[in-house]
Image 1 (cartoon, rainbow, N blue to C red):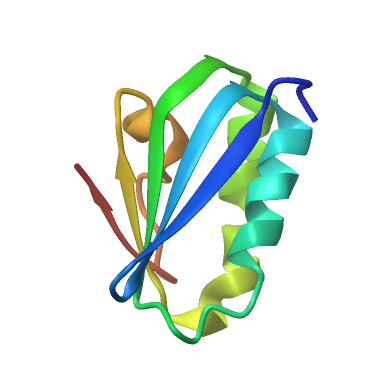
Image 2 (tube, rainbow, N blue to C red):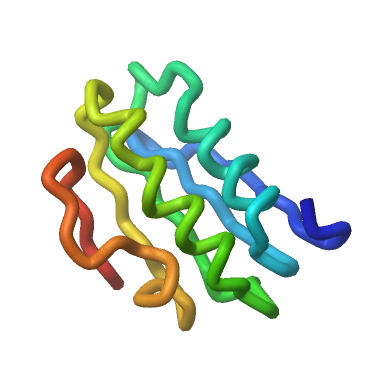
Amino acid sequence: MAANFKIFMRRKNSSLELKLTGDFDGNSACELLNVLGKDHDDFITLVIHTGGLKTIFPFGVDTFQNNLYLFKHQGLRLVFTGGNATTIAPERNKFFRISLR
């Protein structure tokens, strides 16, 4: 994991907000995937704030996008926000409702 990568989590009603900071590499992507893989029965929406990311490595994006299918059974809505939202979010995904803000 990039030494400066962190995920800050905050519950907001039926949403879980994840604020990403630092550099996003392959290990950072795995850490984010681990958070998505946890039991989120209390949540309908996961909001992923990307504005705090500094350097985004293509391998990190590929790792994240190529492994999202592992969580298709959760039925979560993923919302990506911030200046890096379009870089991190998959363009088309049949498993999640994905939106950008």
